[in-house]
Image (tube, rainbow, N blue to C red; front, side, top):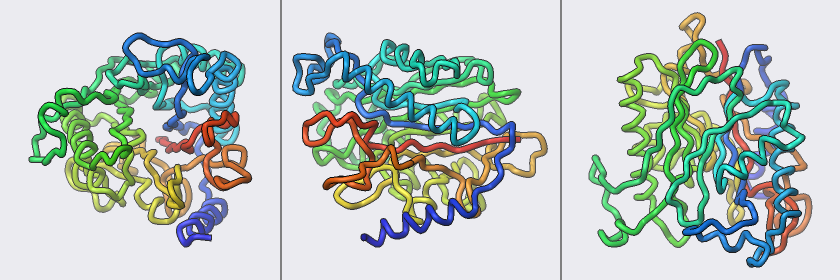
Length: 357
């Protein structure tokens, strides 16, 4: 057993022994990379042919229905564990409105009454970010997207040539501003450029720079607004794009003006993980909050809650979401393995936080 995995298991024991009592009025806010939630039809202009009945994944209606049910069952299981549905759940790797409509209509989660916000992005594979929300607790006020560009404000040196930059396409960041209870909250749902093909951290540093600039503008326009940033960042919480460009801090005490609190930074150091690659556990699925959500002294205001004596975040990794045998035993139970459909869930575990007054 690796040292990192041993720490991970030890941290789980600590978590189980030290879980805090959750207030009845707590809101669950989370993120889940659902790994290729595609319908079975080809969308013009998108590289999604593998997810058609004739494609290499032989993506039939039966497999699509199983995938939907599996993802819905994960959302239901988290609600059962927490005694409440997510108020907000960000998603990555969803293809379009149709898959979201089919997901929220699934029997497993139909009673939650989820609505969603989704905007098509220029990603060549056709995967986007979306936000599920419960309209009885969160009222959407407005939505905008943050397109990716290379107009750095801090001198990032890019590996791509100007021509490659002009041709580069990736997911937009989705920002939804709304009213959670009686307070304003903005949530950013991200899926930053991947590491595949040797892509450098410069792309993700620029993504962080784009999000941070929009947060600062949001806080200036709406003083005191609560902000949550979530997503598959394709970097760990301690990597430079997260600490230097997004300005995520490990502890609330470390935060200065304009900084964000990064709950999963401490958790990653303590051995938690949301996805595994070559024996190493990563937490790419991060959630950050701004200073407004860390002020526990402000009476009657929303703030982030501890998940145990040492942490403020949750990784949802029950046995049914984990491969139980074979070479990938102990890792997230994914949809495909070795090119074969294995009827799993995702190659990522979901993460979430709780906030309350």
